[in-house]
Image (cartoon, rainbow, N blue to C red; front, side, top):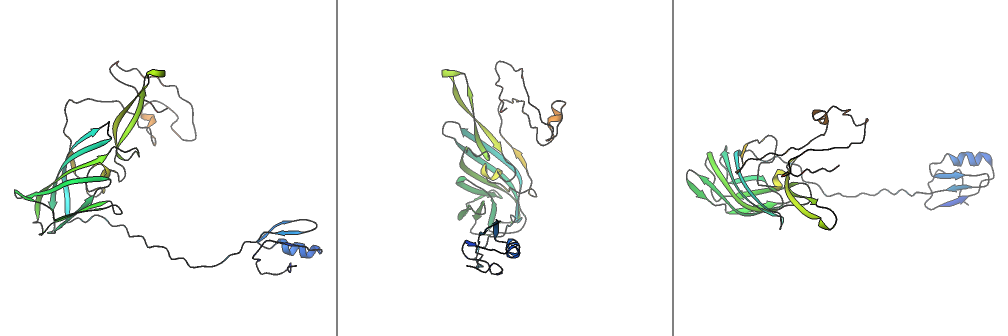
Length: 264
C-alpha cells in the first residue's frame, strides 16, 4: 500500500485505503487525487516525464526584394469552365532600381510556360526559372545583370480554376427543378490577402502597388452584395450588429435575361 502522505507522484493508477480522516483530508489535497469516499481514495496518476524535443526551425518570413518593382500589369485571362483550366498572358512594366541578375516575385499553383524580359528594345530570356512552393515565389535568373531603368516582363502561364475559393476559382450553381436541373459554373476571383499570386505572377505585397489593365469587350454590370463586416446598413435599414440577429425573406426583381443567385 502506498503512503498516503507521500509527495511523490505515482507512476500508475492506485487505490489507497485510508482509515484515518486526517489522512483522507491530506491525500485529497494532492494534485493527482480524483475522488475521495468514506472508504477509499481513488488516485488517478499522470506520470510527467521531462524530455527535450528538437523542433525543426521554420524559415523566417522575408519580404520581396525591391531591386525590381512593378509599375503596371497588363493581364489577359482565358478560363475554360469545362476543363477548369485557365490560360494567362501577362505583361508587367517594371523598374529596375538596382542592377541585379535576379527578379523575384510571387507565384503559386501556376505553371509558367515562358518568361521574357524586354529592355531597351532587346529580348532577354532568363537562364533559369525557379519556383518555390514554400516561399510562394518565382525567381528569374539572368546570365548578366540587368541595366537600371524601365523594362517589360512577359509571362505565358496556365492555372487551375480551383475549388478552394482562392485566387481564380470556380463557383457552381444549379438551374431548373426536378429532373430538369442543370449544373453551371462561373469563374470568380478572390485575391485577398495573398491569393493574387495564385492567379498570375505578381508582386503580391501591400507596399508594391501598381496599376492594372484588363482587356475588355462589351461592358456589362452585375449587382453584387458584400455585407461584412458592417456594410449591410448600406443596402437596407437594419440592426447591423452580430448580437441582434433575425431571419430574412428576400425577393429580387430582375430582367428575364438575368440570373439572380443567393446563398441564403
